[in-house]
Image (cartoon, rainbow, N blue to C red; front, side, top):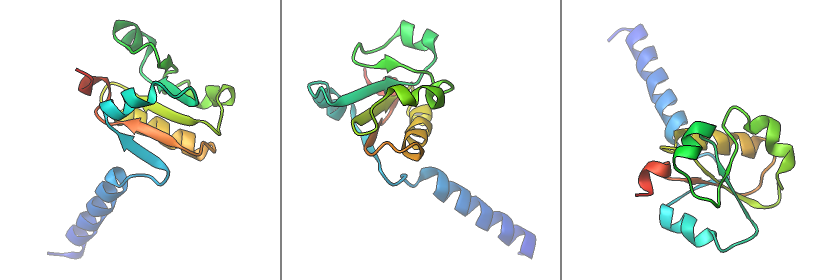
Amino acid sequence: MDIIQWVVIIFLVVFVTYRFIPTKGITNITIQETKDKFKDKKVQFIDVRTPGEYRANHRPQFKNISLSELPKKTNKMDKNKEVVVICQSGMRSIKAAKILRKQGFKKVCNVKGGMSAWF
């Protein structure tokens, strides 16, 4: 192999590693663990899907703040309370969890599999 192929391989390994290694301070939780947290009044539940997706199917404990609106709305949330984030599959919610961590939220949970895993 020549040097260009090695560079491409190294780049791909770094990219995949970066995308799939959990971010510090973000916990991935199951649907059952999410349901167990519903009893805790100190937990904030955020659904980052679009309003249309939310209206079509949601859990009433989750407040809808779409991913695109989240950075503008975090000032209305309590940074000292735990946040549980969900979307349809878990991809947007992990992005949302990273945004929340960068904005100073201490404990953030991502629901593995999102709403798709609920059924």
